[in-house]
Length: 411
Image 1 (cartoon, rainbow, N blue to C red):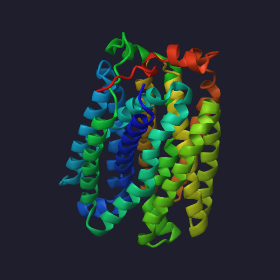
Image 2 (image 1 turned 180 degrees about the horizontal axis):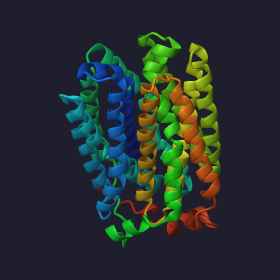
Image 3 (image 1 turned 180 degrees about the vertical axis):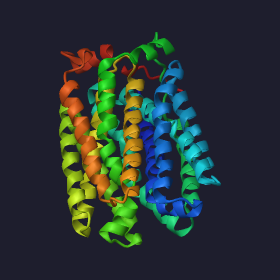
Image 4 (image 1 turned 45 degrees about the vertical axis):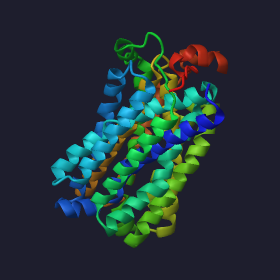
């Protein structure tokens, strides 16, 4: 087992990776008007760059999880962060909107599997009985990205250009690469893990039910957040200089959601999924109703950060629980699901805006999407995963998910 100091350093390296990925995922949304103007495209068309990144996550997570089934988890993390750096630097130099859409797809490929493998590494470091808080520790990087990284990229985009934001993200990716190399331990895959076993895990019905619920339900948040800047400036009436402040507040809400969600998921994963969906629907309806009023609108966006992060964290834990034979795949598919929701939310939100319904219409669409995801959970997604029924925390670590057992070795 690792020393406490080394374990904390490993979790910090994973959180730093989450910070990089969270920044690049949400940065495009905060710079959408600038990107559209520079590349000569309307805002809904520029939103295709968001959709392309999300589709890269959807495609990359299961594909790389299967192809990298036999690779040491540390080596795979290093390879994924290297690909992340390349994708973001290419995005910074995209000459046209078409090229940017393609490069954002490339940048999204390592996203989901990085969080999936990182979650497995984090759980292996601290123990499966604290799996909710282990996932939360890694996801802290993503929430800090929304509180600090995304507002910073928005400021950079407003002052020196959106391309420098992607250059900065790529540079930080290099720092993360060094931290992962220095602090994460070797984590061999469980004996007998092959490409075939990973593919067989895809036959798990519970896995796909949870995936579908997440993909549909999480689209609600992205329908609003994808167009948050024009919503705040054109509907709420805020000065463009205040947008980074609101984005930072949203990130603080996500940080609160991470702290709360990890503890709630350790008590009841499925219960947390259900109630966070209900809460997200309520908040999205509130945004649609009060989006024209500055103070209520900002408060509602902060609450959306809280509820959506609790939902995302509990969904990831649920997917790991229902895929005990391939937890990396289950955790990675969570991000495929969330980013399929990202793609759907951005696309549908763009459609209603392009149709002349205004920037509040995506909130109503988002509430409907999350409600549909809730229906899926309530109708067919309940029940305790068989591998976890009646198991103690120690038995779970030994039997439920061999890859999560403490099989750490030094570099």
